[in-house]
Structures are given as structure tokens and as C-alpha cells.
Image (tube, rainbow over all chains, first blue to last red):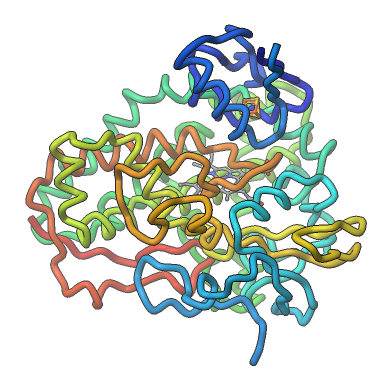
Length: 64
Length: 393
Ligand code: HEM
Ligand code: SF4
């Protein structure tokens, strides 16, 4: 499952670009919004890639 | 044998050979100001340094990498000017960046798409009418991002001659301190006047919004405007110019793009990776001792992170030294990494996608109008690219 820390996020948008079904960005300050905390299939792969790409370390993946 | 940053290129698209041939991912490097620091060339260590808060971006701690500093190094050693958050650390950095990030989200930038398409089409139409031949840089590569950032910020495009001259001067590596200082003062003076005018007459653009928000002083908004204007047009312009040159030198790849065999999104990421126009990379200074790649970086030592080398790291990218638009270039560091990762990256991506797609579609017979070795390269500029690109069709 995905966890996101908007305090750490620098709103670079890599997550919304990489896994648009899983992440969005808040309209006010661009920080991360999780749309789907438990993505499946291709969305899960994209989400894992986004966690890896996130420049600020705001995202983490917890196997549950 | 010196250990300055290698800067001599033997190929238009490849980073200097000595940057890539040395297998050590971390080695000693002498900065242009004599400081004994470090050079990072691997993807893994580049990411590690850029993501680590113990490596500071503060201007007070900056050192000059090459004999002529880039804009953000001109003031190395002095406190950052208000609003110039690229040379600040959190929390100051965060305070400024947060005020802007809402304007640069994937969604916000996608809304600019129709207008960006229109700007691109108008410039390509005008280029067609005026030629062949044409110089693609002043006809297309430079004015498109320049106009886009002006509209976003609310800087009158009619004033472009002034700020394009000042920014070009600032990014020239052979400018004297005096020339650079004059250009900086001229641009700052222009922008602070503009911001005062927006205080009197509110406007519905990014700078107008910052003025109306009431949270920042005039000097802070001027610094932000300066940073966005300079960071926002030369980089993208050089990607358009150098990217077109690269596509013309790899015609099979250009065909694949034109015929839709590769997506323009993937093509743009690969061009960003392969060309990495922020050619001297980014620097950080250790604020405490840090263990890195088996060495100890002592507090106070600076590390130059070579983004061009990291993006050619064979351990991270298969076939790193070839341009292959079908490559999976995701994870490239052309926009940096960590808290300073490029604020304008979604805007740059859209401009490049629209720009290359329209160029491929509208100019199917585009080719160089001069022998490739006659294309003047920007080895002398902080942002790499081509000075001119004579084309015909
Ligand atoms: C292809 C085009 C571009 C490239 C290759 C590029 C590259 C970069 C890089 C490497 C950094 C990181 C610097 C560091 O870590 O010290 C950066 C930061 C930055 N870029 Fe870009 N950039 C591009 C386009 C843009 C555009 C269009 C804008 C404007 C709106 C922009 C605004 C910024 C800003 C404001 C920062 C500082 C961010 C911070 O310190 O938090 N860039 N860019
Ligand atoms: S990629 Fe990371 S820093 Fe960027 S918006 Fe998403 S969570 Fe925030």
C-alpha cells in the first residue's frame, strides 16, 4: 500500500505523471494526493516506479 | 595532470570523454576557484547527493565549477538574493517553492496546451514563409519558450530584446564580471519596475498573483521573476535547438518519430537524457561529514554532480551512449533530483513534446543547410546547445 507525506513533497509531479490513476496533485500547492492507496496490476507497477522516481522521498510502498 | 572538471567535447552530443572514461564514480576535483572538492559521475551517487539534506545548495557555500560561473554561481559565497530559492535550503527554499508549485502541476500545465500549440504553429508557419533556408534558433527554438514563460509570468513579450540580451550575457561563460554584473543589474531593474507596475495595476498572471497574495516583498518577487525567466527559457530553447540537431543527425530516429513508431513523450525523455543541456551539472556543499561511495566528504567540501555523466551511466541505462527514442529513459536526471528538482519540468516537457511533434509533422523534409561540423556549439555556455542551426526543407 502507498503512503505519501505531503509535508516532504516538493510538488515535482513525477508521481502524477508516472501513475496518474494512483496520484494527483493538490490544486493549491501541487503537493501529492493519493487517489488509490492500494493499486492493483499495471497501476501497482506504475506506483512502484513513481515511489522510486519521487525526488523528495515523500512516497513509500508498504507491503501489507 | 590536472583534475579540473573536463569540459572539452569531441562530439556534438557526447559529454567530454574524460568524464565518461574514468570508472571511478567519485573522484577528487579542483574547482575553478582552487577548492579541492569532489566530482560525482555515476547515476547512483548523483541521486544520493542530490537527495541528501546534508549536502547544501546555499549560495554562501557555493564554489565555482568552471572558470566562468553560471548565473546561480555569479554570487557564490554571498548570501542569496531574496526569492532566489535555487540557492537556498529548506525551510527558506520550501517557503518560496510552495508559493509557486500550484502553478506548475501536471494539470495546470496541461491547461496551457492549446496556447502552446498555437505559439508553436505560428512560429513554424512564419519560418516556412521566410525560407528556406532558416536559422531554427531565432525562428523557433528561442522564441517559443520565451513567449510561453513571458505569458505565464506576465512579462510583456515586447520587452524581450532587453531580457533576452541580458540573459544571454549572463549565461555566456566568457563574459567579464563587469559585463555579467551589468546584465544582472539591468534585468533586476527591469523586473522590479514591472512588479511595481503590477502593484498599481493588478494582473491575472503568475507575478500579478504573487503581488496580490501580499506574502512577499517586491524584492522577493523580483528574485523569483528573475529565476523563472532565466531558468525557464534558455534551458528549453537549447533542448529544442540541440534536440532538432540530434534528430537531423539520426534520420532513422526522426522518421520513427514522424511515423508514430515511437511516442513523442518517450522521445522527449530520451532526448533529455541523451543531451542533458545543464552541462556542468549542479553542485552541493557538505554541511557535515558524509560517507559516500567509500570516501568521507568532509564538512565544507563541495561536490560537483555531473548530470551529463550520470545520464550516460551504463549501470543505469542500457545502451547509454546511443540515442534511441524507444529507450526507457525514465529515471534520468536532466531535471536534477531531490528538493530542487526542476520546478518547470512539466512545462518544459509539454513545450518539447508539442515542439518536436509539430516540427516532424510540418517539415518532413527538414535537413541541415550546412555541414554538421559547421553548426556552432555552445561549449562556452552554462547551458549546452547550438548557437545557430541553419536548416532547409
Ligand atoms: C528542458 C528544460 C529544462 C531543464 C533541462 C531544466 C533543468 C533544471 C535542473 C537540472 C534543475 C536543478 C538545479 C539544482 O539542483 O541545483 C532545475 C531547477 C529549476 N528549474 Fe529547470 N529546467 C528546464 C526548464 C525549466 C522551466 C521551463 C522552468 C520555468 C518555469 C524552470 C525553472 C526551474 C526552477 C525555478 C528551478 C529551481 C527549483 C528549486 O530550486 O527548487 N526550468 N532545472
Ligand atoms: S513525485 Fe514526490 S515530490 Fe513529486 S509530487 Fe509526487 S510525492 Fe511530491
